[in-house]
Image (cartoon, rainbow, N blue to C red; front, side, top):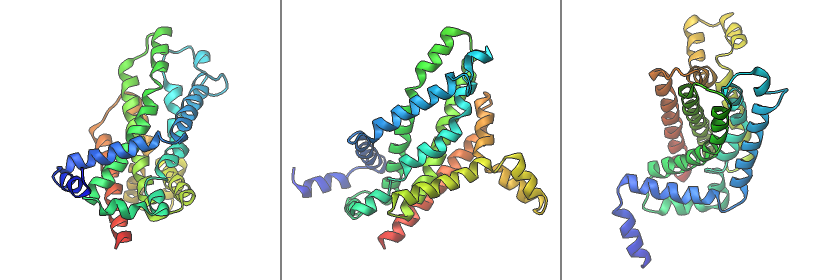
Length: 260
């Protein structure tokens, strides 16, 4: 098929099909290099250590059949592992000069931004799905509340998506992946601790109550804790999807400005 024919065929694709094309391209790209496998191995190894270790998760010492210890450490693992995924989304494209090629393809910018994000989110989801043997092990050892465990998985996946959206925005700002990683970690850390009591106490000493409540409302950790207890509140779902949409929109604006 000629280049002209391929371009014409691409132009005939609807926005969803174009987004899926980017998603497939990006997701396949993760497994071309050893980075994906290293990430998955580290994620599985560390979550296993944190869950089963006597000094950390203390699963057997607690004598309780649940995955509370497993999910307790997810926010702090994601704080470093998710930026390691997101830092390459746009920074690598800019560094290698392939972003110009991407922008010349008959793919609208929103489809490119969404496709790259969904590929990263799907990759994080694959790593999360590979922890399901831990869920089966807990069911073998006892009788956990599987509804709560399922809700915690949903909350973990949503939190990973929120972190990835933040990382996508930061990655679009710079071509240096290390800088993108560091800034993303700092921003995500801020979103995690914004609902912590010491932070609230510090703010309440000088800020109006409305500001304190607003800052607390942006806490990823507070919302994840709520979902991981089996309470899937519509407000928490709206929050995560709104944050994802906001930062993806900001990513598109940054990429568009860089292109100009």
